[in-house]
Length: 331
Image (cartoon, rainbow, N blue to C red; front, top):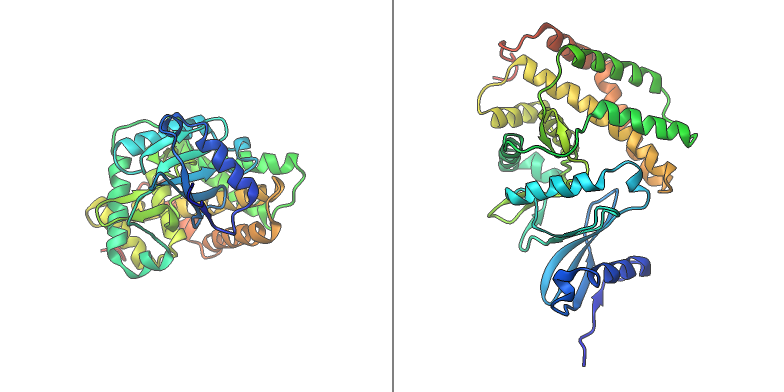
């Protein structure tokens, strides 16, 4: 008699069907007549639906791609980029990837913890570990298939919103003005590019006490490395002191005024970008109650950098190229 399959009651019949269909089409499993033992939900994931699936007593992380994501995500590029990160031990091992839908199966990292905001705020060791992971893949010498340009991505999202005749937050023109200021700055001082994750939220980090993993590479592309550090700072709600600590751990020395300015500019770019993204989620059918406040929080936080003058100051620092002066408050 077959064992009963244990399935979390919160999982919809639609997703159960998609999981079974996916597993039944993957040679890795069909060649072994593999059988699903259990399906559980996994935390995190605004774009997709994630599950822990036990198959023949081995655990896997299964991703069912969210609806409408192919409109703004390059799935073939993600397949290429994520595999590079798996090869160097940063990402979980990939078992299967559908580059048309974005559905994916990875080996689940057993005996690991998923990190959350308090972990980065309260334990320096996680900032140290993150800095080392960032530095490793930023300097791995590999090339991602795509360029992730926050300015162009924001412009793309904005155009899609206009096409769909969707409203945006009050004050959008001022934000677009500052994005244009950064665009002009980058024409004179283009950032150096490296493989970047671009969405390193706290729940994308896994610690099994042997390795420190960064998963979910769907937004990966060649970008300014400071975008990754700025994104983590925002996601973990780091203080300025913690930001400076992260930067020192990353560079391995005291940081310059220019390096800190790069972080500030990329924090603005990150929040501006994801505020557009959040409203686009609503435009593609997701919950307004969930995504509108999420985007508004991002939008308001980006505006704080405008209103307190730190964004303009950072732009001026990079314009003047004061790369050799140490940040007075960073030593």
